[in-house]
Length: 98
Image (cartoon, rainbow, N blue to C red; front, top):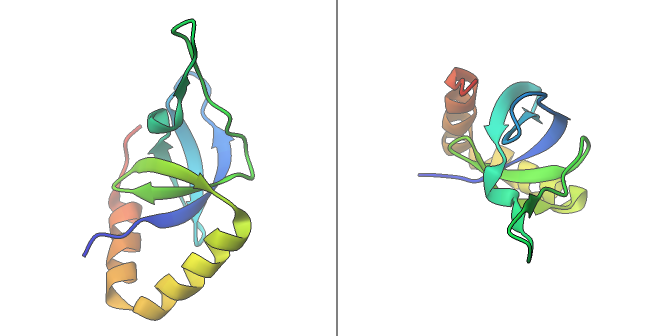
């Protein structure tokens, strides 16, 4: 089973414009945030993301931003799922995209 898990942005990583350090249940890992960039009419891209924001993560990529209430409700539900959530956290712990 593949899950999207909520994480809180801890910092945007200097020198790596598409990476942010994110905390999921105390586990901190670099996550690719490039998919959250929005293309502007002039062809440039912007990223409206800062520390304290919550994102939905799947296999090391941020898929969307979510609000804190949704993140906490999702974490509560995921904790009740058991093995699938534990497996996803184990995969996050083992990952390193830096």
